[in-house]
Length: 309
Image (cartoon, rainbow, N blue to C red; front, side):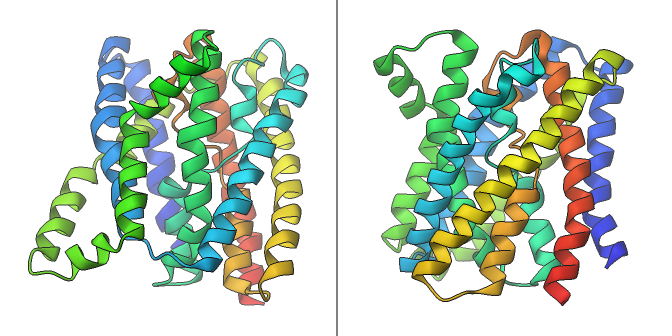
């Protein structure tokens, strides 16, 4: 199990380090980083999100889990704004580090180690947080980043965001059954192979973006440590509340609970540097995401032990 975990985690840490090295050695400049940001945010990531929901299976249990997780993510964001005073002067983006989770980069891979071939169970949880990430989370992030709070402008920004469009199209077509129909047709393999080819660089690019601004300056250690601890506390509260609601309506399902548990141990989404002009806060955000990832790896050992119990 340890070697299996290492196989999934080592490439993540390696790409973080590569991003840091690109900055340290100036392999590419900040302008080059902006180009990678644009490529991922406008082209590659929307395809990843479209594919995830285009091929998902939809049911009543999924609808329940979606609503619960979606609301929980909103609660986590609200709690972040209440707690951000504890990390001043790095409080501007701190709320976004306390909610949602990085399902695409880590969640599916780690869940696959626990329940091989059952990624659809984790998708039940990931749907809620992904839609929250590209609606309330992203709208709030852009409002904080730009200082603009005009509802009309924010709504337009969300509706024209390629990632949101990809998510919305994927959900609509998936619910209509187009995904199943397309994948079972003679061109199904062509579709899956093409999408796999287009989306292959996404994980590496996002991790390089985050790692590029990674910094271990002494003054960052305290606010980052506080952020990581507060995230663990907030996500633990959300896990308890979400589980109580879900399993008071449907019978207890250990794999589904493990999916919820795993989601709440993962780091915050790596998309913050993609969709916000983080400026001087970039080092704090990247370092916090890296430390949250390390914490997630350590907690995964406990999740694995519970799964095997």
